[in-house]
Length: 273
View (tube, rainbow, N blue to C red):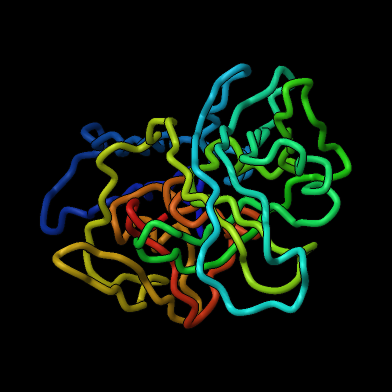
């Protein structure tokens, strides 16, 4: 990643004045060297750790309705009656994200933990286009619990920095113990505000280390295919956004934010995050 240096030194230019007669007692003083203008020191905080952190303890941050969806036949009796019901997504008192499921059949809560894999996914089940990259994050069955009134509580595993704004995860999905097709899904309605309202990429033209190809649909820049040697810093500058905003648009890059992959598209539209 290219970053600006700490400063530039301006060289003093001494111009000889040809043809001018100078007496020994009238020498001109030498021109003073210019003092370099200090520039901001690049942040020592890694880009991924600069991603927005929107979560507050005790918040309800999302809701959904877990329903059976059309899927390929799967020869397993558990596939006939997957768990369904209402869900809420909350931030618990420890700051951890939890999915809470109030199942249509409360008696099935215990078997749901043992028999099914329940994940948060970037896949969309609301008719909108899926993001460029498909990610899933498991809900930790080993730490699952059932409340006295039958609500199934599943914490989101891992401490990934992008969980400070988990709105790139668009659904809760269920399959049989991590195998076979998705049996039930719930599109998530998030209540978190966008940290970058109105964020829009504007192409200012190819530049050094930003020579790739942008895709435009209906007047909106949707994605960008990097060329070899493109950098996050220069691509962000080309489209008038910051490096952190580029990473926010592409949360799957959080583990390796300094590397763009030649020919692998990155997202530039907030609506397709």
